Amino acid sequence: MREGVPANLEGVPPRSEEAEHEGIPKRPPKWLKYDKQALRFFGYFQEPVHESNVENFRVRKCVIIYYLDDDTIHITEPKVENSGIPQGVFLKRHKVPKPDGGNYTHSDLNLGMNFDVYGRMFRIMDCDDFTKKFYADMGITLNAKEDYPVDLFQDNRVLTRTKIPPPDSAEVREYVEKKLNGGKPNKGLQQFLENDRKVLSFDIVWSDSSYDGGLKFYTLDFFLSDNTVIHKFKFLIVTFVGRS
Image 1 (cartoon, rainbow, N blue to C red):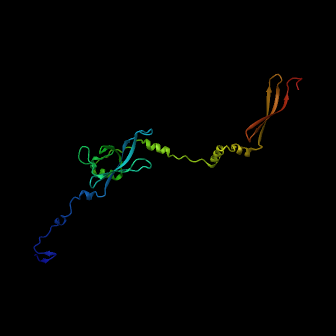
Image 2 (tube, helix red, strand yellow):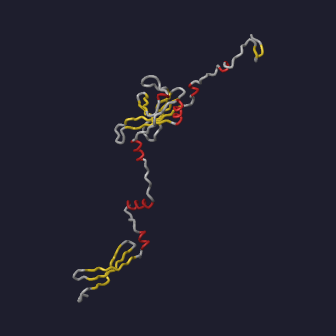
Image 3 (spheres, rainbow, N blue to C red):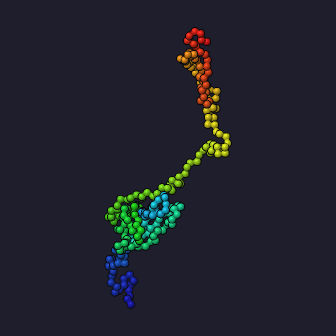
């Protein structure tokens, strides 16, 4: 048994400064370097729809998550209200094999590409800001993002769920009265109340060139309450003697 002061043991060779850090790896492991870091892509796949006069395929949007610590992939489908199809977790987290062998890595994923998962073809459209920054730091150029194709099902849902503003109370009351064969509304009531007993009077003359004609003078009255007209004969002037 060796004897001596613990801080200065006899017979123990001194440790170098490099040996003090031998337990710390020079390069951190992958699971430690990329812990809780994931790449998120946005894409879709098309599902055929049979026996429907509205659509022949449906666009099902998905979120593809690639975990950098263990190269696993997780795919979810956001739930759409009243879609009639099961949604949520589409693919549980695990390493996804490629069709030509091996497993998918982050270098195999890019925008504007088809992503084959067990025979189902996904189209990657876009990604989040962290994913763009990660690929930029890795020196990998991402393709331009794409837009989702037109989904006839969603367009039809927007039309069917459009709310028509309700009519005002006067229109509702008029509709109910007509439906019950009740009193008919007087659309000219406001005009009558504002212009009752207001009359525009004009003096007019008619030069009648017939055998028994002459200058015939009338009074033309225009009633503002209901836009009606009445004319009244005043007198006649004959142009030759013997006519009264």
